[in-house]
Amino acid sequence: MRISKAWKAVVGGAAAGAAAAATAVQDGQITLAEVITIVLAVLGAGGATWAVPNRRTGASTDDPPQAL
Image (cartoon, rainbow, N blue to C red; front, side, top):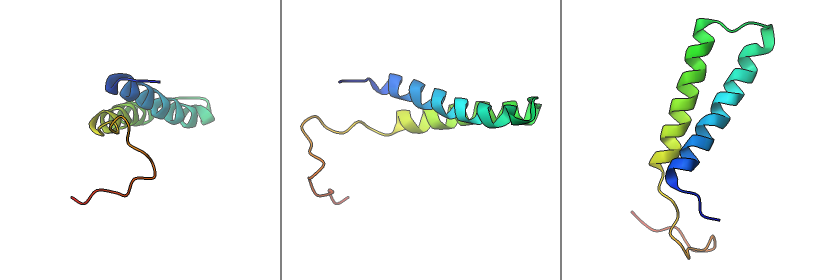
């Protein structure tokens, strides 16, 4: 299955936002600070996922790590 870098970022951001939102609604209301936390979770996770390059096609998980 091939998922583009953009879709991985969207899914990662949505998952982080959903987790933050689930925590925020535990007390029955969402404050401005919680909304800011949700937005930052979405942007942070989406941005971090977008920034990490995809593994090369054909690379094996058994390959030793490459030196920088």
